[in-house]
Picture (tube, rainbow, N blue to C red):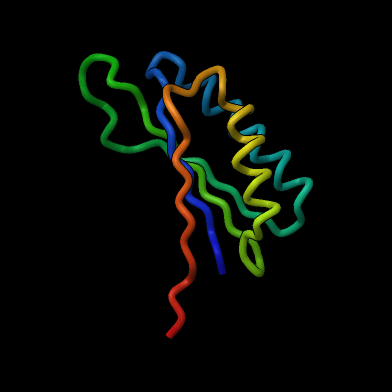
Length: 100
């Protein structure tokens, strides 16, 4: 099964607003796509001095995997959802379950 891992940076001062916007996007996406599981994480070691930014990681999994159409939706609509807070591009990684 294919799962998506999407990470991006935001300014530390904008972290709460960025995370709220992405969490709302994920809730709506899960409502529209039965069985989709979406999670949002913050990189744990982004606590240093200054404003190097904060990294957020979105994860997506679904029974049967993430198909091409759903992946395109997650990428395009997610770009819009975090566009006001995103610093740079969102990076999309696609992983498949390891089959024995």
